[in-house]
Image (cartoon, rainbow, N blue to C red; front, side):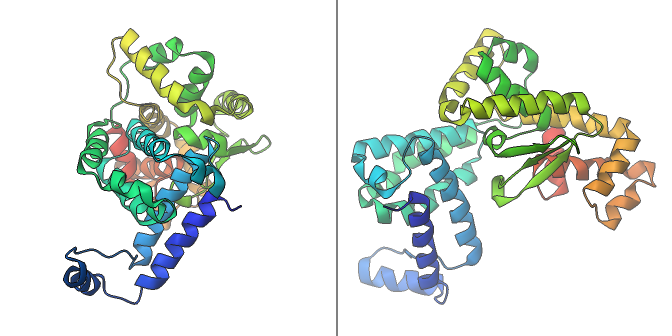
Length: 322
């Protein structure tokens, strides 16, 4: 028996090995002559392979949380059960705030790799009605919006769900990152391992020790409860809380926006913390120079917030609070 994630990774590796020495357009033209369909079944660039692999490893996380870990588990699913699993996955991506384009990448990655392990899922993935439904859900998600009264929403959630939302608000976590977090009590640091894009980041709470104590307590409790296995209930409870408080549902991602909007003000107002974090997060020289110019302090704060949210472009932090 083999783990599904290794089988899918091997499929992607093989597709890349077959396609990297061939021009995609040339192969597509040849296939059109032979089959009437302009398509390439291979992967022709390392960038595309990396994007597909990231997407499919996230899908494998989703499968494993539902007990589908090995090839026998995947193969024991009926076609209808696998279709429902795929549909649930894309619904969750939309609820997490994934964009239309991100969902498109996940569909393409699944079409390349999962269909080799389970050919019966191919018609379902290629069905235009299904694809439009998944894309539209992603397009309609409004992850940029924060809640008007997030505390009122949290107070309506059951205990476990409230803890998830509070952890997101305290550290800017994506929902699944709580399970990937470890901490160092002596250094007042929290590290999120292998987060989005395979990146690992460390957050310093040296200037926020009360938040640190609350956060590590939440991390321990949520891990113990294996909260990831019940995220569908979290999103449902969150929707109900929004309805009860008269607020529009913007997904769990909005708690990251709450963190960003509060955090950017903290950084601007606490120059000592800003200076300490510029050093601790090993900022480049041009960012360090911003501390000497009052007109450029915002750029230094953006750098810190970008690091803490797990992005690598400064403009991404501004997307959360401007």
